[in-house]
Amino acid sequence: MKLATVPAALLFAAAAAAALLAEHLASVAVLFGLLLALVLEAPVRRKRLYLIGALASGLGVVVVWPFVAVLGEDVLWRGPTVPVLGVIDITREEIAAGTLAGLRLAAVALAFAAYALLLDHDRLLASLGFARRSAFAAVLATRLVPTLERDAAALAEAVRGRGLELDGVRSRAMLVSPLVSGSLERALNLAEAMEARGFGRAGRTRAPRPAWGALDRVAAGSAPLLVVAGVLWL
Image 1 (cartoon, rainbow, N blue to C red):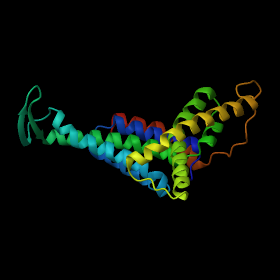
Image 2: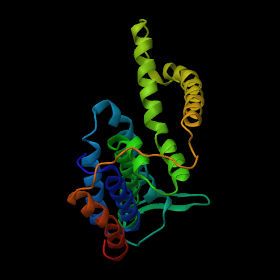
Image 3: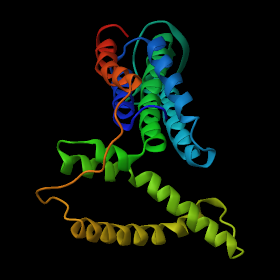
Image 4: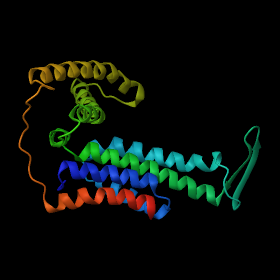
């Protein structure tokens, strides 16, 4: 990305917040489209899992919502009567509300996907000058999914090199054990590296950071405005 890590992270967080706060379907759809376009810039193999998760979860909400919600009077389809639930019908208002909720969920998932795929998390951590312990924990947590994804791809490639092909959920479930053990080993190595480098001690040093450009300042200033717009106008 052309933006620095901190302004980009602020924009992604603001877009997710605006999508949750916006009340108009068109506004959420625009945010969804912009975030989807950003995620599509990532490499194909890395973005596939994020796109499937975001789009499938959003579509699931759109499909299920009209059957569980009771909203509106413009009935488009009247189904059977189910004990406890009553008459199962679908109204125009339920479809609109379900579409809005699904787009909200998908937009938030795509904002996280853009954060995980397009940002340099090490540079983001180095850019933070306050609450470094909390920021460090947050960055490590958000790096878990892409790290496990890279490890799983490397393991699958190693298995494929030995003449075995991973097809189906059951065969891929064999990767869970080595992934867990690899994660534990990485955690120990990280803890040792942090201790060796004096993490948390006074008088810490910091690598030089590139200065923000005009576009970075505009992006950082636009983030809170986007949240306010989600509350007041969108």
